[in-house]
Length: 327
Image (cartoon, rainbow, N blue to C red):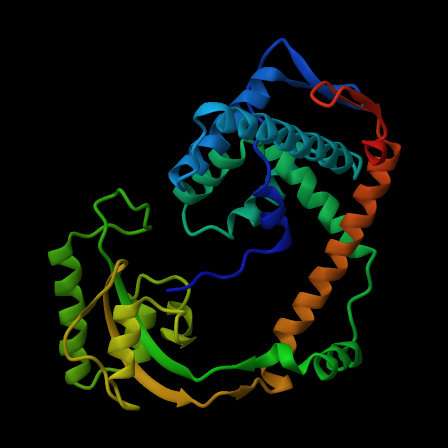
């Protein structure tokens, strides 16, 4: 039903798409070239995505929009190139070190297929990813972790950020319905998934433990490891799931499978949580991770600003040359 928030490294990597080749150079970053073919590929991909959202690139307005998109995209590519250059300065990695970092990075993905799709999307080599990971490690190593007192102080000064509306806490077991076109980690026909859900309901009626069945059978990687536990507010879950859960009393489970866009669910109500404020103890770990990550992100921003100030960049679309701070 929900996925873990991806860490800083993965979020940073999502902005990359440095592929293609060509002879015409549209920009250089400290001597490294960005070609017209690379830029055109990136722009075409961005236009295709925007057109799916209803953006019209026809006529004079479309041409103006395309030119603006080219300039914006090239700026992003320049920044990405500079970022990779800085990553390469973080220390030479052996082939074994590259592979070790990639092996750890892959653990963030539910399958090899999902990882390969990610690589295809960002169009980076595993070696580039490893150097970015290495730079993050170097930055994080130099930043002291936030103290418990600092975390508590942030909580006390920003209590309005830690309130929640009424919530439902449920356990659920999911069986995907997918003919292979959705990219889910497991594929079942509609009939197969429904039958699997019905079999679980039969076992529950026989007295089997819901959490144990969720850990054993659920295909939702985001909740199966904690017995299918899922806490949500109105609007956080798909409507069919929310409606079925809301109709239950604590301790009850759905007597028939619940169909959603994901597949078939079996749901058990644990408790209804009144609107209020999250206790510090409940969010301390998450808030600590957030503040530590923010410290690393701030350091990254500072490093990149310094790199931009010292970089030698040419950009033929803006016909300017010099420090990025002057562009």
